[in-house]
Image 1 (cartoon, chains in turn brown, red):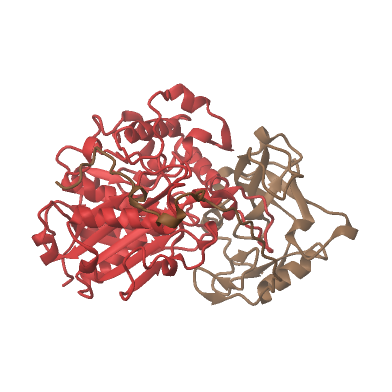
Image 2 (cartoon, chains in turn yellow, red):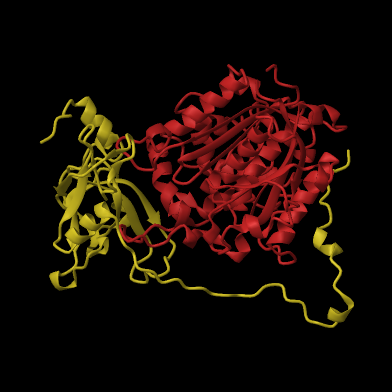
Length: 199
Length: 388
């Protein structure tokens, strides 16, 4: 065998020979070049409707014409069927916690976050997919799948056209949604219950 | 009928935190050179080159395959780039294989790489998006809720993930190319390491590595002509799905199950656990070993953690050795990580895996996944030619 798997071969870089005229020059191994890119985000129709509604404290989803499933944030399409979803649905600012993560790492640009913090898939009442949110107002060890939550909004004079209008999601104290009907289980539980028809 | 295709050569760089002695071209050149050396071929023998890496914004070099064409001997030859996030190393090998299977090229060089020391993957994966809040801390933040769901569904003992991590770090000691070499590590240290993304501990995550992995693939005549053992490809499959839709099974995605069914059917394998001798699956967070064992049909749903607990996945004494190379948990040059799984499967059936060789391995399984557990690439290789 030409290659012995138990022995590391020598790095090829060892064979590089510099020209004579570069003999005394200090070698440069790396150069740090911080870069920055600023750009304007031009949302498509679905995202524009969603972001504009946030300024009025409204959360908009879109309904699938195929089976009525509601998507939030709306992306203009039902990814299961490739069907356009032109119809908006206004959703309440209440729901439950699906999957979640207790994170102990700081995030650049979010110095306001106390470590540890809980990021979660929030399943809004009336929506059929989760969207990302911060869960606060409760000890991180007490967060659980199925826990009922309500949005805590920024003051009116600070509202913009952004999902950041919702500071976090706080527990409502209502009874939990059973785990087998929470998060990504919710859709199957709803189908099984035969409550497929929606307004 | 597709052309029978073989892995003629494998080339890897030593995986480590920083390869400060080489640039990107130097890094990929080293892996490609070694693959050619292993295949006992030279640059002119190669008809086409297929390159994969994780998203360009990791290192900030756009379309690096163009910049790397000279280093890979690809000038004047067809050069193809593959993009499928973390699964890309696997998808790239599958695309390269398809060029030979389709009779388009006789010998193809394929390579995956990443230079994590020149990037910051965790934060590159946490870019602020205008329609979402920025609170997702890298891949761990994404996969932690899915792992939590698996634990809830199966009632698996809490330390199963630690057992996987400790096993893979022991395996890494048998592989000189593996990044993490921790001979003094104890199981207790794994258990006591800090929680980063609960329930994922620091020691249950993959390292950040620099590295490249290359394969030389050839047609049946090239495989027959090889003086060295080759690995014959018995099946390849790719699948993908959206990352968020109503009722999505995030723990056991349909794309994963469909991809596995396809590749095992191609290879004519009925009893997956009994007929596969060595498994290389993409496990960047420890709990993904039992999760994928179930999804891939190596055991019943809900039983993956039992294989871990019984030691079935150990090289030493297990009947289904998993990640004998140390796996992604011991080396993670992202764009190469999937190809390393495919390469290690090939090394096993060629009998060339050195100290982490599974005795008498005849059939091996290579796997990669990426994105939000939504892109899949798999192959099965064997010591013998496939029947069709």
